[in-house]
Image 1 (spheres, rainbow, N blue to C red):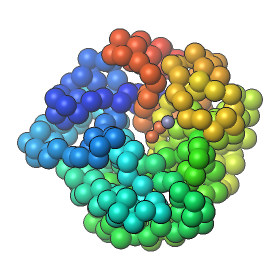
Image 2: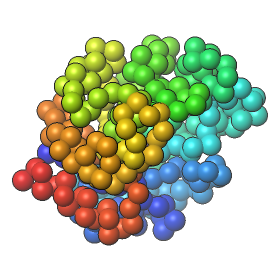
Image 3: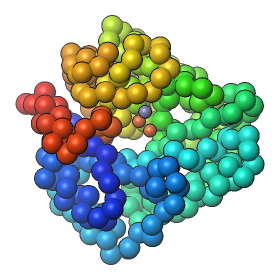
Length: 276
Ligand code: FE
Ligand code: FE
Ligand code: ZN
């Protein structure tokens, strides 16, 4: 069983994204909670959120995987940037309550020269300052490619963040296949080993969602450039083994591949066929 979908644009509203995903043949999707580069957010109309929630229930959608802004850096050395990031996080987490029970994923951050240790501390502090016991969203740290000063390029760094967060039952990880490959994990020749390592360090029970992307670059390139399904260095066979892996069943798989609508419809179709 798979919950499959892709990243959608929020411009026509929330119920509209649900309808689009039905047309695409999928049953989950991702969206930016605000402008991914500028960081501005549009107010969510409660009736639009309720309409999407009803549609998802009716069409048996998997969990949504919302994505925080790329400009949100919880561990920036620049204080203004960092404070803006903390504000965005707080605001996003509050707004996600309009979609109870879904996931909010974000890039942990880039320590911009302060060192991973300091980065980890600041990211955890941010989460501790905005997460609250009654919240219904699961917050997900994304596995990163380890580009520049990115935090989260190793499972150990993600674990170190989780260790410092108080509300651990509301915190998990989103496994991005392009990023983990680019970080150096061998998804092609040692998928079982990678997932075993993930289990030992973080715990597979904390793996809530998958970003399902091929990579334009060889393993350990630390680049983070996504490729269409099967057209990159991971390749169709390995992508199929990932989708069918017993440890990853029933989780939302989100395509962030460089595609137009027709390309996403095609990829969703291919993946669904693997499960027939
Ligand atoms: Fe991401
Ligand atoms: Fe991703
Ligand atoms: Zn990426």
